[in-house]
Amino acid sequence: MTTSDPAVGELSEGQVLRGILDRLGPTHAEVGPGDDAAVLAAVDGRIVATVDTLVHGPDFRLAWSSAFDLGWKAAAVNLADVAAMGARPTALLVALAMPDETRLSFVTALADGLRAACEALAPGCTVEGGDLAVSDTLTIAVTAIGTLDGAAPVLRGGARPGDVVALAGEAGVAGRGLGILFDRFRDAEGHPVPVDAERLRAGEAALIGAQLRPAPPIGLGPVAARAGATAMMDVSDGLALDASRMAEASGITIDLAVDALGDDPASALRGGEDHALLAAFPPGEPLPPGFRPIGQALARGASPVLVDGVPFAGRGGWDPYQDWDAARG
Image 1 (cartoon, helix red, strand yellow):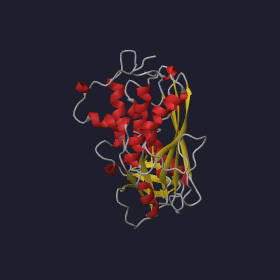
Image 2 (cartoon, helix red, strand yellow; image 1 turned 30 degrees about the vertical axis):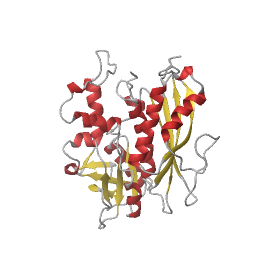
Image 3 (cartoon, helix red, strand yellow; image 1 turned 90 degrees about the vertical axis):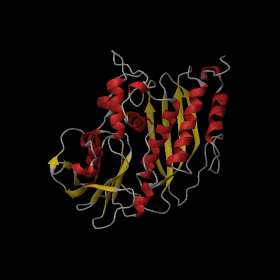
Image 4 (spheres, helix red, strand yellow; image 1 turned 120 degrees about the horizontal axis):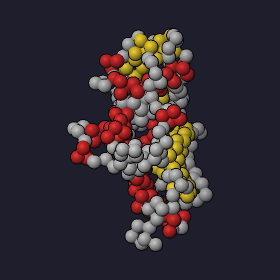
């Protein structure tokens, strides 16, 4: 056994679990980690639940992401889905499957990232249970739980013609960071290599940081719900692609204004993984703080998404089934 930093394959499940629990902080549940199941309070008799899985290869590359990064991102992407329903996240359940050569320090750093993301993005939300398994492929599956606090859920299919389409959070920043990683930090055979900070230009570290540790505006989900949002979803795969999903679900067309998309509209339209909140609000009402108008909902036309009145061409986002290059690294 490597006593200073053993591999998980050299330890019992209980020893690995103890290393994780020591990093997660106090529980907020009626019954938290350590028993057969957690017991969580249902504030208004309902829960909001979602699950997302990060798999080494299609979802992250270990040459680029630290264990802390992975813990943070695994939490953030799930917290955003809860917020997009207008709910407040309350708990995470985390299943971690990993090769037996994985070092315990990696596992504890991942737990640190989970805790840090919850504390920064959704105060009061904690990891309340999970599972450990051995796998040839590092896989992190997170179930997020939330509460609506008595409000109605905000669905993606409620937008109406005339609604203002608005965004809270970044658009395309994480995608630009991913582009830097793929363009400049792969070897001649296409395998990922660690990021060399000396090769980064001004501002590029922040772009990569947005990809590895996204910071969606989780608290604005309930704010949007209270402000009367008619539809909402998080932008995980690209603004144009996710806007088309909202438009299809609502039976409308969304016309995006290019001058509202920042200094790089192409990246804003196609880049994903910022996990911003895309929402529709009734016309004539002030937008809640943190949201900015980026377009309008129209009666359904031939195209689900327009940009300055012109049909948007292409998928406009990331599809893991079509876009993964089969590399890991």
